[in-house]
Image (cartoon, rainbow, N blue to C red; front, side):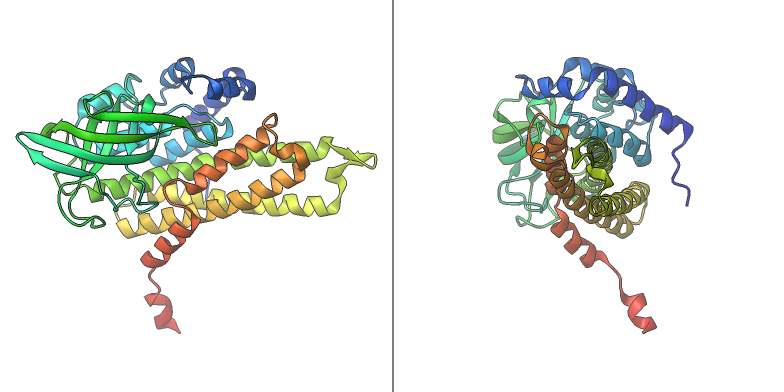
Length: 382
């Protein structure tokens, strides 16, 4: 199978590499992480100028109608550079709007780089089960009143609009009764508490207290938001896998370079056969994860929901395994320097660890894959 990117996709990747090398080096990134804002307006403006915000948006709203594979290329380079800007949060929010088939005006603002989004989906009691929604949406007049808590909303404080999941009817973990809303971040009753996560990103806990939302802010029909939410979560997990591949490649390259330069007993430690074997194992994990992440990106466009779910969960699991193995080996091969904040390796490992835990960890996706796997054809052949 040909895994080569198109010329246009490669041009996107090269443009991002040049920008990151020039204006988003490790030292610059560290200053951005430690700043009060936790992001850079200059970096965001560059992403907009390069067309990254327009890439996932339909042409009708001023975008390029990019595919998941196009976004794979972008996320891989953002992962390689450890970019902390709210790009994935915005792309995931835009995908929810697109799947809902409305809010063209907001999509146009996203494409132009004028609007940043965040997805307030997780709740304290839910862990990885996004069906477990205690936030309520009570119909009142010509709109709804939202009450509840959302936890660990990535870039929640940097967003102009929030994509909020709430329950308009049904039991707490049922798929029926889930509604999705667009909520202005500065709406009355929205209380945002921001904090920095271990990987340098920004997240927020959000309290919704008697927040009035017009019916026009619904994404899709009331009580029927699960199909949109399920597809969007797979989309986000697939893009996280792509980001992880970029970070894993950078961490692998940094470790290889370290082995070539760090000397012991008068020779580079990369000359030691035992360490060469460990690097070979890391490479195998990386390439297997890359193949699964690419497969997931392709299958995100599949109309077969079961096929999409299986591919995404298989990729998230395999990438998660690679994160643990490559990350741990890289830290060990760097020695004590591997856990210091002065070295990029530690920051790659932190970001990769957070990716593994976001939108379902390896155990969650393994169980999900098993639940959706069809072994009937195999059993009938025995």
